[in-house]
Length: 236
Image 1: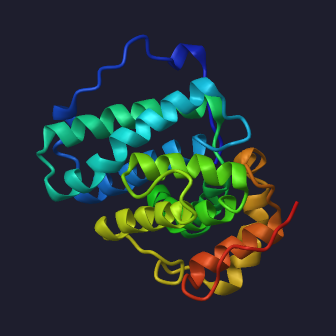
Image 2: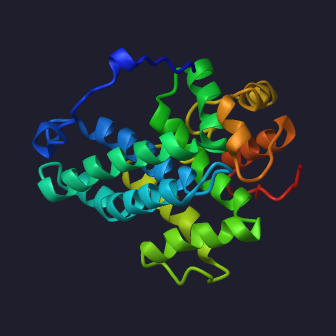
């Protein structure tokens, strides 16, 4: 996945009008919503995070997390649509200040190999990356803040990381998207090749816990056998 940009392509004004989004198909609402949520979560913990990016990412999360289930239930809910729209915008601003992490590194090879929709790939991997990164105490606290914002628990609750990951999984389930790679049609024999590709993605370098092809393979295995694997193997 290659990013292209030029100052000539930059908008001078962005109009965020939720009424323009009410005709989005449910599937498009779901996959773009999951992607926006991942932008807020990942940008909050990257190695490039800073005070400005975290203002954007946390405010984005505070808007997106409660709005996403509501917009899935009622596509005409302008309040929820507006929260998703502004939240996605703020999460994009967070990315510009702090980049992304392993979730996007893992997602891109799935789209390239299987033509998997980006938001579907993100939803498959984000919960596992949260658990993997959350084994770093400093990052666990940051995830805990998001868990607290979602009224799951207090920020320093030992279960905060797991509860945040479970919440993301519940979003994926509510969106009727697949929750494991096998269910999404991925072949287990392809996982080493996918992991090598993921290790070459530019976002991997910003993940708060170092990753390489071996740890990324383990994360794919977690997403392929979500009940059998847990992302615990350290690789620095």
